[in-house]
Image 1 (cartoon, rainbow, N blue to C red):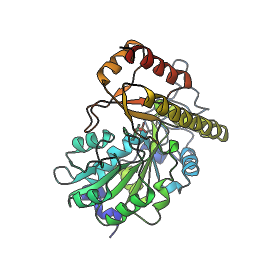
Image 2 (spheres, rainbow, N blue to C red):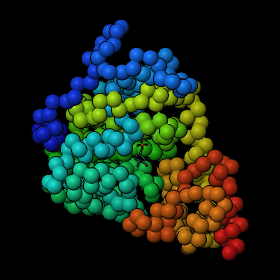
Image 3 (cartoon, rainbow, N blue to C red):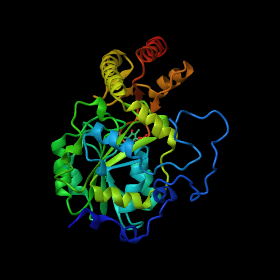
Image 4 (spheres, helix red, strand yellow):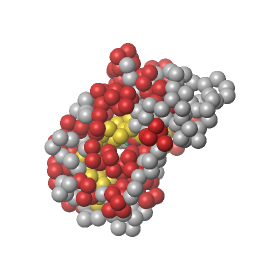
Length: 359
Ligand SMILES: *Cc1c(COP(=O)(O)O)cnc(C)c1O
C-alpha cells in the first residue's frame, strides 16, 4: 500500500488549476495573466528586482533550495506555504473526507489542528497527554479508531513545552503505516535539544514534519512555513493549494534571512532564548504565587499561578501581555509566558515581584 491510498479519492481525481505563471517560461512579453504592465504606485518593499506587478512563483526554487539545505532534506520533499498553518489545513483537506474521516490529537495542544478539522467536517479523536504532560504512545495507539487519517504530534508541544522523543515518534508512525499519516509539528524544535523527525522520512512514507520561520527565525510577519514529506504527498497538496500562495516580499524576506550570516545570528539568538528560558524558569519558580513551572523545550514557559487571573490583570495593567491558557484542558490556572529580550523578561519579573507578591 502507498501513502496515496490514504488521500481522498476526489482529490486524486481532480484536475488542478494551471496557473499562468507556471506556463510562462522565459517569455519577454507577458500578456497571459492579466497583470498590470507597470510597477505599483508608492514606495515598495525591497524585492531585489522582482517586480510586484507580476504574480509570484508558486513554489520559488531558490527559497526551497535554501530550506532544503537548512533542514537537510531533498527539495522535492518540501512544500512551502503561508506559515505551517497552511500546511495543516491542506493536509486535513486532502486526507479527511467530511463526515467520514477523523484526525487525532493529544490535548492540551496547538489549537489549529482542531480548527482545520472542524472546518473540513472531520471528526476529532482526543487522546490526552499523560499525567506529566508527556505523550502516551500506548493510549494513543489503543485509542485510535479506523476513521483517523492524520495524527498530529506537536514536539515541543504548544502550550506545555514538552517534547516527544524520536523513538516514540517512530513507534507511532510504524504502528500506523497503511492506516494514517503522522504529522510532527516542529515549530519550536530549534529551542530543543532534539533531532528533527525528518531523519525518519526515508523509512516511513506516512510521516510528515512541519517547520516554520515564524519562531526561531523571527519571521512571523512573513508567513513562511513548510511541510516536509514524501514527494508524492507534496504533489497531492500542490494540487489543492491556491495558485500563488507566497507573496514576493515574504519570499524576499525569507531569502534575506536564510544566509550564512542569518544562520549565525539565529544560532546566537536561539542560545540567548534558551539561557533566558532557564533563568526565567528558576526565577519564576522562586516566587511565592507560582505553583508550578512546566519543563520547556520551546521559547515559552507554561506556569501555574495560585491566582492566574490576578497575575494576568496586574501584568496587563503594567503593559505586559502573556497568554492565558486556562481554557485548555488541565491547564486551569496556567499562563504561557513567551521568552522575550533579557530586559523584557526582567520587566515581567519586576511586575510580579512588586505587584502580585506584595498583594
Ligand atoms: C506558531 C505555531 C505554528 C504556526 O506557525 P506558522 O508557520 O506561523 O503558521 C504551528 N504549530 C505550532 C505548534 C505553533 O505554535
